[in-house]
Image (cartoon, rainbow, N blue to C red; front, side, top):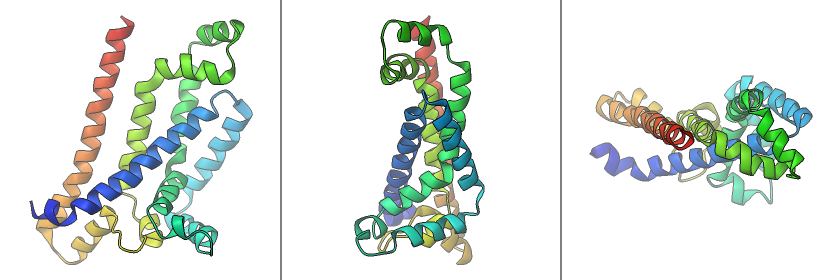
Length: 209
């Protein structure tokens, strides 16, 4: 109760910025679905960025946005979302690459033969077939982002405390009760995402049957 009363706004803010990052990652991944060359370049770039230490990603964000004209981004939660996207875009792109290999090419080819454009194929064939997995990708990025520490510590906006930083603070202050309670919020976020994915997958299977 104490953790919720004290840090509820930080929890919601962290979850909100992370959820936006998950949605953006999936949107980017789906947007390059039909463009193999673009998808390969984006995937390799995302993997390279994801392999970099978080501190380097944070430094890159500071160099790019800590300047005049970027205050609406750098001084507020969007800078965290951008950092999370940079750190975890590889998750969505890898999942979409796997889906692309497994996709029913007969349906895609039939839709293309019927005159559907690349965007229409994605909207009317790819998304209905794979939306539970894409939702799971967004959930995974969200959970990873909530727990992200290096980027959050380097580009933390004024007046906003990402929950990952609060957890580290409690760890150093030996406030074990709050540390356990806040850590369980990360477990709860992952559990909720997993439950929603299982429910979505089950619903899709029932629909297709």
